[in-house]
Each structure stands twice: as structure tokens, then as C-alpha cells.
Length: 397
Image 1 (tube, rainbow, N blue to C red):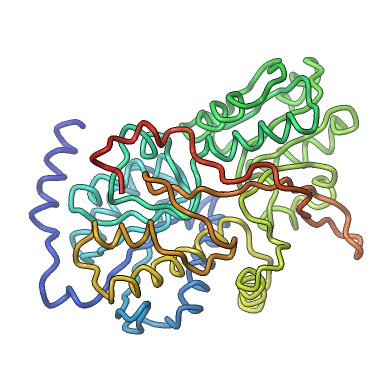
Image 2 (cartoon, one colour):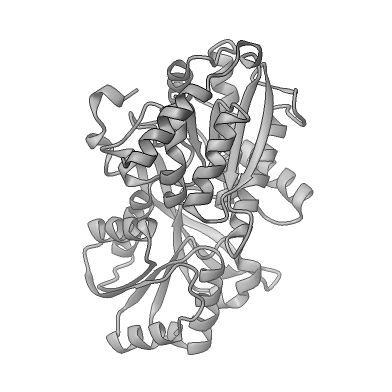
């Protein structure tokens, strides 16, 4: 931690004490990317969170969740770590939040966590799960409705093995989340990685990369690139004709956000997910129905994981009898209280990460002729992230 960060954390600790008068009102700051090429992902997360609030009876500030009055604040990180830190400092010092929620990207969460942890505020991540926060720098103030990047990628490696893929070319964006994905998939994949490409964040021109990987003649390509990056890659992949000779496994590139834009270019591709959206789970079906009715589109996994946040929080508040002033006690309830998840029941590990199943999903042509995502099989049961054993005993709950 540098001098500026230490000084900022110390100052915040003095400024951010919650006045007794405000202690009866739970205050949450939800941060997500709302501008730029990743804005659609952030909007899905916000939408899912709002549906989760509604299903717990909350519609406006002052309404109760789990028996406790709640006030919400929203912030845009602009996909910039410095902006995320500034916004979180504002939410902690000016809005006096008790919980910082949201977080789409690992680098955003790593930047924004400082004022939250320094002031003993809870972090409720709905997407980002940095490996370091799962392991060596785990904290009793962190809980996630998501996974670590390695955890999902390990499941992808298991899927590649199950499908008999013998040679693989890997493509990921050059940031910590992308590197975590590489570490995950290569830790379980048993075939040969012929090569890999680390492309810049926000890249939209993949023609040279596609030509390069075709020359390597892999049996399959593993591509990670959310949002606009994934849309651009998929279109160029289809235009190149590479899919006729190479199988494509995507990772957070094809979902309900991007599929309507990508269209038929996604048919025949595979990916893993911790959510079987076609599950008959009653809570899942109600979530999808209400999401479509309100927003006019199918929810993505980002929306689904955000939806689970308020459901988890409400269950924990009911367990504590509405008490939330002690963040560690509330965190214990968050990590040890069954709640109505759209994925069905799953337990939590000692570091605040879920122990969850992963599924194989394929993009096929539906009965209406349009591409759709279907669940094919369970790839991994009760997956634990690979770093939980590194979490210091003193920080485990």
C-alpha cells in the first residue's frame, strides 16, 4: 500500500463513521460500468439488482428489505480504476454507505476496495472475484454472488477435456481478469496449448489474430472477451470462415446481452456458466419473467448474479433480526444463510465465494429460427475456487 493510499484510508476512517441517527437506515452504494463499450453489462447488473429488490418488496428509498429501511445510491466507474476509487470514497464519506455492491471488473474492485475495507464496510460483489481477495488478501468484509475468474475458467478446461479437445489456442484481454482466466483454464485443461494472445482491453479488430491462430491449426479456440470485444470477435470469426475447421469455446462473450447482436455467428459455439437459465427452478422462472416484462429482453448471467444480491441480503437481515451495525456479524449471516437464489441452493466457502455448479451451454438454432442458448450438461459439481486455502485463518468466517 503506497503513502497516498495509507493517508486516504486513515482520513476516510475518521470521516466515515456512521452517525447514530442514520444507523437505523441501511445504505448501499451499487457501482457498475454505465458508459462506454461495457455499459450494457453494467446496465444488466443494475437491472438484475433492481428486480431482486422488487422481489423483496423494495421499490423506493425508505421501503424495507428484510425488515430494514433501505436507501440506494448508484455510481458509474466508467471502467476506470481511478474513477471507481473516487466514487467509492464519495459513497463512503458523503453517502455513509454500509455496503458497497456491484463491481463488474476485477481491476475496478481491487481499486475500490480500499475505502470499504479501511472503514469496515461490507463488499457484496455480483461479478468480480479477484484471485487475491479469494486467497492471500481475503477479508471478512467480502462476499460474492459470483465466482473467481479462475473458477469459471477451470470449469471451461474441464469442458474442453470432456469434449476431447486435444489442442487449444487461447485469446484473452491483457488485464488481471484475463490473466486469471488463462491461469484457470490451463490448470485443468489436459491437452496442448499451442499458443495464446493477450489483446488490449477494448480491442475490436481481431482479423490479424484470427489469421495467426488459423496458421497454428488448433482443434479449438478458447476466447474470453465480454461486451463489445466479444461482439467484434464473433462477427470477424464468422466472416473468416474459421469456424468450419476450428471449434470455438467462448467465455463471457456470448450471452443474452450480445447474442441478439451477434446473431447466427454464435451458432455452434460452446461456453460454461454457473447459471442454467432454462432451469425449471420457480424462483429462476419468476426472475426471468419479471425481467423480460420490465426491460424487454432476456437477462444475462450478469443480471442473474446481481438479482441474487438483494435476495441474499434480505435473508441475512431476517436472520440477524434486522441488525446490521456490526459488519462481521452481518457477514456471518450473509455467508451462512440459505436464500432464494435463481440458481437454487449453494453454500459459501470460508472466503466468501460460492461453492457452485457449472454447466455446459451451446448456442443452437431455435424452433423460431433464431439462435438461442441451451444447457447441455453439468460440467462441475460444487466447484470451489482454487485460492480459498490461502485465506488466512484470522480472516475466515
